[in-house]
Image (tube, rainbow, N blue to C red; front, side):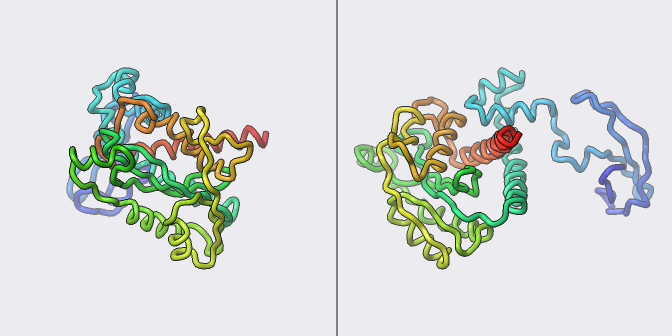
Length: 299
């Protein structure tokens, strides 16, 4: 009876559960064990307690997960796997929940295998929702050299530069949630990183204060950003050596793999929450890619 330990209706123990035949699930061509509770008479199955319970078209889950991290828009994914676009939108939210759990386990496994993380690179990725007049910032922390993501947040910020006046006129005053988002991220990093961790950051004025507050025993090095190159959509730099290559390469890769983050795209984010879901899925797939790359290099 696999991992089934109690009845979902009356919480009867495993000793009160008996096998009651099988049924064929046409969705993925599997025979599923049916179970009956002797105490209350309820019938259920091994599938009742799975994350795909009541899902249709389970076969598409892995394909949808990979496509979300391969620069495909929901409409193209729906056409590829043969479902309605609403199904793909629902799978985005469902898969993001699974990916968040997997990302935590992968990070914990990395720390157990390689020991405490000594050096971290931290920076903000800029994007927008719906229009350039509604910018968003995505503070991200990654492990230096291996580029494993440690965490991120998505926050709204006011428009700046030439679009500031246009934004205020069209959409009113926009809240700056970046300060709160960075503090939440650093609170999360406190539970992951050692107290003496070293940060490599750019010249942002808020970063040193955050590091001193949450990692008073830690240290940081400030590297002033250089002019971006054409490749990497401005994230990769023209200099021969970039001390922030890990975070800049991660941003360039994210812009190439997440269509919402492309510099020139009509696949814009309508809700910041969906952008966060999309990034969670991308981090999940990207960690798998990096792990396969390390295996090839060791072979």
